[in-house]
Image (cartoon, rainbow over all chains, first blue to last red):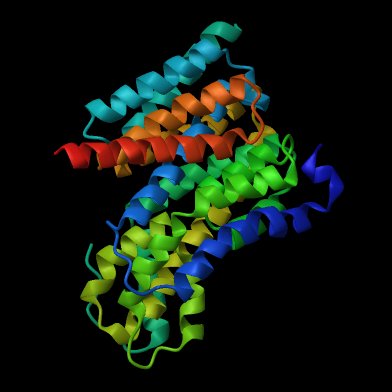
Length: 114
Length: 241
């Protein structure tokens, strides 16, 4: 079933994008007294959010769509690994990691598609 | 950069916030991330105005990426669950931010905008900068900061869509690659506790495995199972220590 085909894209945005996201901010506003950053529920919710985001990252790299899917899987994985190693090696710099990953992807892509 | 200690008016405090947004490290991070998200939106056939509205209303890059990348293939229910699970972290962030903003005469409605504006970039910078400011200017300053970030994100979302539409596939592919790469690195950088690192590794593996096996609600299970496992290991280690 394709979600976008059923309703207008803007209604979909409100219903499954804005509302399920905003509810946590609203709860924070209503219950915002006496929860500190190291309380157990906060640690758990951060772990869940981190895992789900990691799942999205893996999907985007391994099961790419569109233009990214035209670049071979091996090149995408190699680029992600090189980028991460650069991030770890160069003072945990996000900028350096992204730059190296993108460079490997670009040259690997050029190499394999020509 | 430390902000000026005082302002003459709420307007001055607001623009002080906008200015520090534009000159902060997050400007570059948001630029790269939203060019990537723009490319993603183009890839999934969404318009630039839809993306701009999603940036203003959702205002959380992970939720937007989940929304954009799953709308075409998942049911509405699955999309809503995945978006909502990714957003739980906003709850403790709001809880931690509001005590910094609240003064004796602060009304609930003064806190509505800062609550909606809460996201990683604004939150990190607010917690760093607000303590140095007198309480009376904090809400305006914080709103300015968030408007600066949101404006940056919205603008570069448009840029990403137009670039992706005009570039050859290889270059459009590198734009799409910006999102997973910047998320991977910034999540790893924020993961200072063992439980967060473990959640990252478990999420990467479970997410790949469940997608490969075509398990329905794959993202929900990745979050709940991966996150809870990481949390359980963390508790066991604490108990053993």
